Length: 308
Image 1 (cartoon, helix red, strand yellow):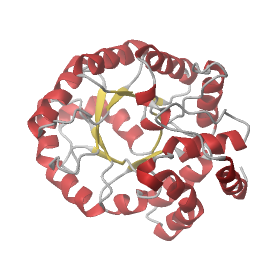
Image 2 (spheres, helix red, strand yellow):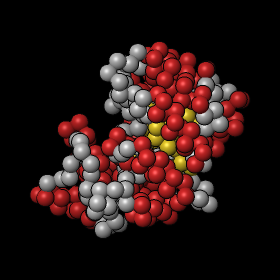
Image 3 (cartoon, one colour):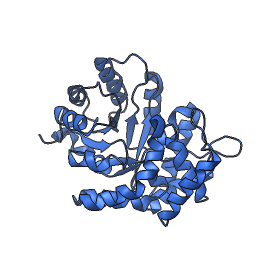
Image 4 (cartoon, helix red, strand yellow):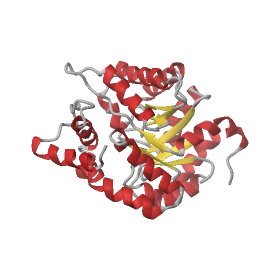
């Protein structure tokens, strides 16, 4: 199945998803507020490092720990900093439906190109209700590309297919269930060519997901070492899996530290690495917590080994 013609206006956005999709961290100042200058510097470092697709207000950006005004601020800072660079911005939105719609409209008004809709965290999510939620967000911003963030293994590919029929601007999916076989089936049930498939579990899962249909992957590690993430992307684009797995081995321990204990230190490890480079304070907000002192040396050693 080929992509429907009514999606042709989204071709540039589809290409941007078939890439390293960076999830920037949100640095905090001494007083606990968003550190605007450091955030700008980190975004500029990503762009200068060759990154062309960014998701402010993603999980690595501590989306759920920011208040609404801070999320708007992060969106605006990102748009200001990428101006003229050609980078594509995919803003994370979510929470209750009115909040998600308001954030999507704010992203549109700020000049963003797409929105990534966080997996609904309401304890009672029906599959039809999932479609309704995303349809409402996509309908509020018909000119923006929309990318559902799929973390629920119960969701079927048919539901995404249904959403795609209702909303032409739903152009991709960030799939983050840790099961490559489930992903392969889901993508084919939804429409392998109808959507751009982004491996939502970063470099550790990217080769396996790429082999069965993904053409992009998200990354938090890219905040620390853009060239490492881009090297994996280039290897995967060339179908050079041995080269991709060489990168995989280099970053394996770093990603395992982030994934341990149900990703308790997912953001913490990235900020610790940035702190080791002198680029960002290590502080995170609850329910995340900074690494204990005795574990910080390991992160610093991993970063040093990458010769950044």
